[in-house]
Length: 152
Image (tube, rainbow, N blue to C red; front, side):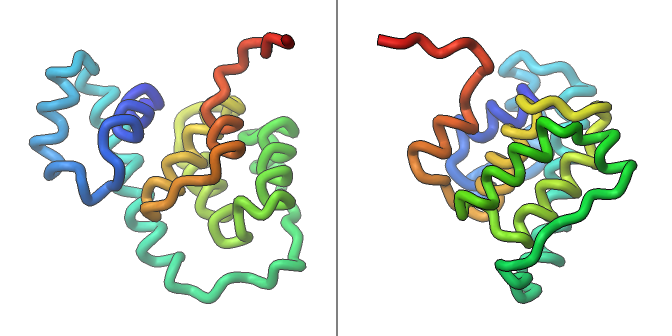
């Protein structure tokens, strides 16, 4: 599923640039993706659209608020993912409302626990769904593949 999401991010600058679901499924199939992978990704994107349409119009939460994670969220997200979300929020990249959208979409995956690489894709897709692109440094952090960085 995450390969399909990355493909969409790289090939369609906004969700409204994507063709209808049937056409998109055919294009993804022609690009070499498996049917179940396509179905999972399109279902996940549909959930993202629903969440953002019902959540984003709500006024943003107080920026001084903090998030307490329940045990089930810790089990699914891991300390590494929660730390990354805290980093993005403290850097001013994610506001509390978008953080909640990211958490909801992370919990909507089949992955247990959600890997940091998958969470990065989820954050990218949440920004993508809003027609926004994070600044260059944060984008680099989100696109990092986990390989060690070479020092010069």
